[in-house]
Amino acid sequence: MGLTTEELQYLGSTDGIIKTSRRDIPFVVAGRKDGAQTVAATMILADLAGIKIFATGGIGGVHRGATASMDVSADLDELAVTDVAVVCAGAKSILDIGLTLEYLETKGVPVIGYGASEFPAFYTRESGFKVDYRLDSPEEIAAVLQAKWDLGLKGGAIIANPIPAEFAMDKAVIDEAIEKAVREAGELGIKGKEVTPFLLGRVKDLTGGDSLESNIQLVLNNAALAARIAVCFSSRRAS
Image (cartoon, rainbow, N blue to C red):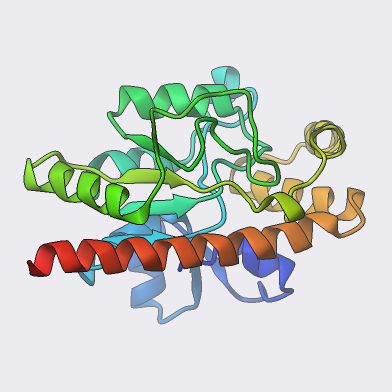
């Protein structure tokens, strides 16, 4: 399971830890430093270790206003080239989810909804956007992953696993908090890799900590699904 800098921030554990993506890995390794991997970096290290499936909270994506800023997460390009599947609760709802899905389509990355036809938005089970394919069992997902890689089709896949309903946040509440946090980031001139930690931190504050509990529960839910898919995938390869 990959813990991102933002998730460690929730736990109060980011002191001296470098947010580590593809470009940062050699510097962290050479300097013997501590790094919290992005999804992109976790995919790379998982691939080196022969791990085909891992879980995280939510993937990075196309940021709001990216048509001007060109702020697009390296996670999306990594998903296009590295043969690792990522179980997540969708894309973080602070992002432009529509453009994120368009980018993934362009890169040929399949977006699978686990038991869901709609792409989840991290804190909520709905985003208003459809997934490419709905699959309802770990066995089906494992079969698709095996077929993809056996055919030599490079790149990973997204398994979008909606947050359990009992831990999902009210969409209107979370949307209002996100809009306010985005405005504040613009007013403060926060840019680049500092944007996501700032926005998630402010959303946590604006929701009275409710988003933290949701974050914890969706990560646990994703880890459980990733484990079931991994068992099925391993069994298929063994046979």
